[in-house]
Figure 1 (cartoon, rainbow, N blue to C red):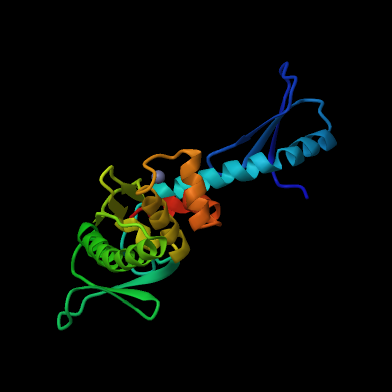
Figure 2: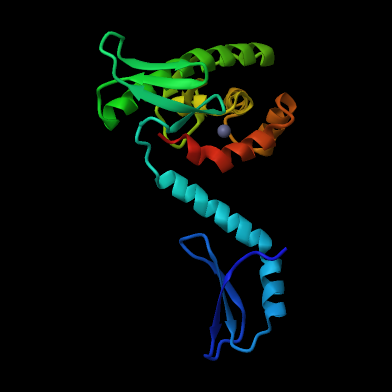
Amino acid sequence: MAVPYILKKSRKRKKTISLQINGKAEIVVSAPFFTGLDEINRFVEEKQNWIQKTIRKQNALLFRRKEKEFVSGEYFYYLGGSYPLEVFREQNLPEGLVFWSNRFYLNSPRDTAGRKIYFIDWYKTRAVEYIGKQVADLAGRLNLLPKSIKITSARTRWGSCSQESNLAFSFRLIMAPPAVIDYVIIHELMHIKKKNHSSGFWKLLEAAMPEYKLHRHWLKENEHKFIL
Ligand SMILES: [Zn+2]
């Protein structure tokens, strides 16, 4: 199937066909002036995988650059689901963020920065509860004993395990699906046994969670969504 592209033919001494994705995610093909359309179409067809991958990467970057505004209609992640926010002001009700019936309700007179704090606090509280419970369950099942568990505000690290087996997890992890959260927890728990990423480590991890590569890949592809 042919994909739409913008064709630029060059009268200059250009000898090869080349392809670019511009800032608007459009495909721009440059070709020598006398190149036949069949040949150009074939060239674009052959580059399909590269085109898809590049556009996906660009979209991820665009998403990352878009800062949250914490206004009604915006969507926020929680345990892998994406739910709309409704902001309102009701003085007779307590201020703050509530998650109810697949919706976020924020009663707040504050500006964007203040509203963001409500979200961070809410996520942190949920993370302490949920991740704390999962770590206890999974550690028990795997017969591993972490020294302590801490929820952090790390932006790029999902989890860590110190030399002394103190575990830390970013509160942002609570936005990911449960299976992905379990992967990060099991990953850090396995570091209690092996404090590196040797092939032995990955074998231990695979024995505990055979499908771990799937979750690891998912996290790499989607982590840009979990920035507030
Ligand atoms: Zn690791």
